[in-house]
Image (cartoon, rainbow, N blue to C red; front, side, top):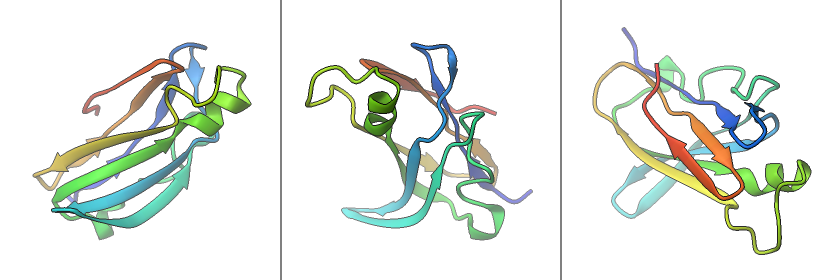
Length: 117
């Protein structure tokens, strides 16, 4: 099996997928961050293809940045500026050649993540 990375975003405050969220993926090495991909969530809150496909997969440390602030503003959930949540970073490691799924469960004042399937 070739490894790959997928993600999606669910709006837990509204109970629906979060469409239109920009996501950036970085490879992390020490204090160095190198952007390797960027995508936007579709109507199902997912990217149209793996954010890190099998042909680009390498084990290591990565960081997904979810640009949640723009979505929260557009959906009327933002509240006062500065936003409590604007950019949500999730740093994680991929140690095996496997499918990794890292979703974001989002609300205006909290978020969670897990390794999904």
